[in-house]
Image 1 (cartoon, helix red, strand yellow):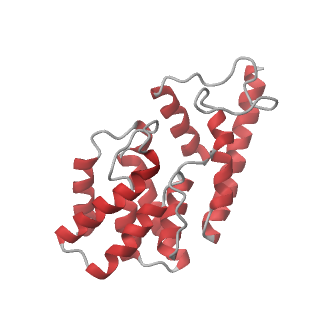
Image 2 (cartoon, helix red, strand yellow):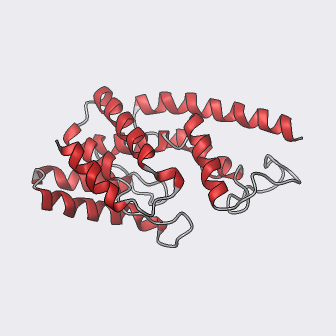
Length: 207
């Protein structure tokens, strides 16, 4: 019952969500979070609402409010859960898990539930789905795929404000080192290896 309620409310909140943070993203994060929670012994009554509601506040990627988006989402989700009568003793942990999921916010996850949600969200940023989301969002933002002078940044400094591919070097390749759970680390290594093979192939095709 609760997941239906979360999903319904989320639909109302996500009208302005970008292409990489749509309903499908949320559903993937929920699925992964459930799997990690089972492996790590995390409380599903915290993990599931946090995973469903982690992006309930929409802030554009290029907004100066972006570093505060997860805190805003935590506050909005907490109030929603209070209004709906969700078990009060779970809400502060849910809010923390939501606030700590963000790469930009740089909040350290202090509970296993927050670690699970953070890993689940970051896993969706890497691997085949991560490549797809990165390229899709870059296209929406009107950025060129790569630098014509040096497609893969080797001698130049990566700049993902200019080139889509550079985001791999600014953020995506670093995510495997931020994983908080053992299961998340194993999956992140596999997905990161796939991304590196993709860029090797891309470089060979555009040279």
